[in-house]
Image (cartoon, rainbow, N blue to C red; front, top):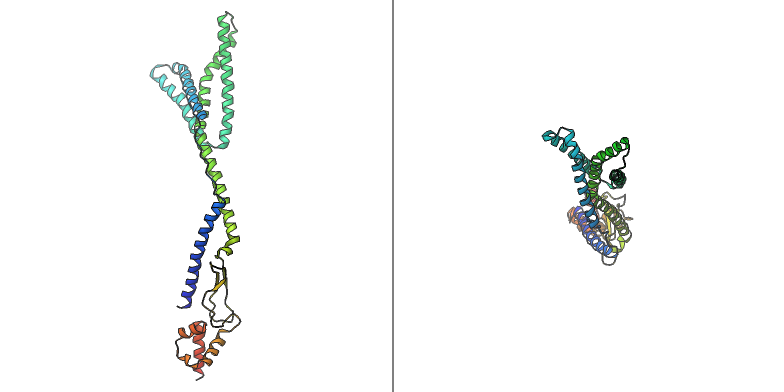
Length: 299
């Protein structure tokens, strides 16, 4: 096995060991620290009642407003088309704007619209009822006041149609808005959970036998392949990669000297191939080749 194959094999072994250790660590960590749950958001009964009520108010407002709109545009077919154009436009545009701007902040602002609609409805209702009671008892109010009350009633229908459509659209989107907020919150918590888990893994990685260290070979060597030492998964002891150092050779021993000493002790090994001699001495093939050339050059 040549040096490149040895290096590749060491890294492959480490990758397999690291993957197995990390997989078991994640399962253990998740049992002790459960992942964040995604909240389930659904429409409640109260929201459903509000949607039905707003739908009825919107339709009633359209009918009341249409009673004047049709006649105002001449009645007949043209008046009806004008009614659909105006009242339908109020509802459609209100829904479109609310749908495209549906967010948490918009949901809060809709409460103000609902309050304005409530106040306006109460004022119109009080004015209309007061006018009816006064007329019932034969009390005549000034013509200006009567015109003002009639004007409020006339304006109330399209105004409430607009407010109702806006509030209805936001109420229909409220569940979706809360669902989006829940997903964003879940994503944020999940990222923090993963970050904490990886930080913990870096701290205990060595204990799981998945720590790796890479050191450069001695600068005096001609073959400067990196030396890999990894922790074994069984006892946490260091195991050498099996290349670059061998048979007593270490960083403090010059590779060329090692080859010379070996050939002095075993002169017959000069007949071995470069690869075989490199395997026996633990030196690099380039170093072994250079030493053999020098020896042969000296005769």
